[in-house]
Length: 186
Image (cartoon, rainbow, N blue to C red; front, side, top):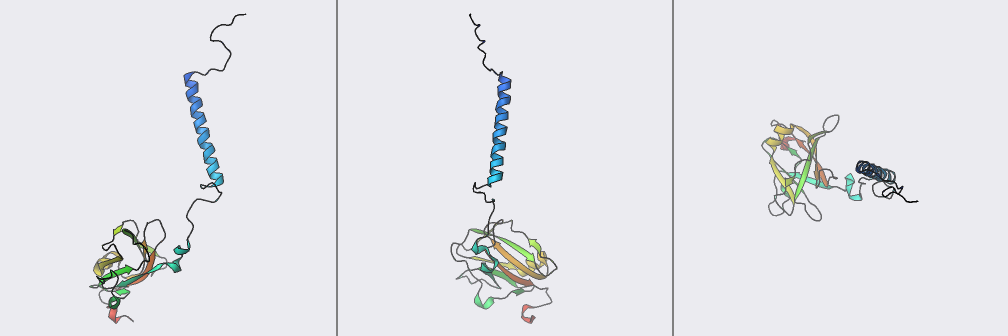
């Protein structure tokens, strides 16, 4: 018996049905990948994605920030004779970090008020501070500017290379009102 042309009993989809089948296959593929990533973790070894603290990120291992009233132009660090951690109106607020290794081009600074019941962030590490000296981390700021923004109190400063990373240095300082001089402090 003769067969009609074009009627060879195979499964034929219309162009619209092929398009829909393609989208369904793509969605199933994406869902399958999502399940695999969710079950195995992002690294494929079953461990969760995320940062784990390195030995250098432990608070005790962080480099200390040195505070004072002047930066030594020869070293880019707080001058030995100018080291203090209590600042009053009219003082120059200086700080530096003695890093071992390469100095980044910019840093992010976070400041927390620590004198209250709970620490309060008064400056978030969102704006990069370009380093004036490429060989060291050191800045000076009029204490009056800090008093105007932060007010009197005890503070913790943290310095980051990346704002979402671990701090590379931290240190505490105190800002006092104009009526109290650092030399009169106990």
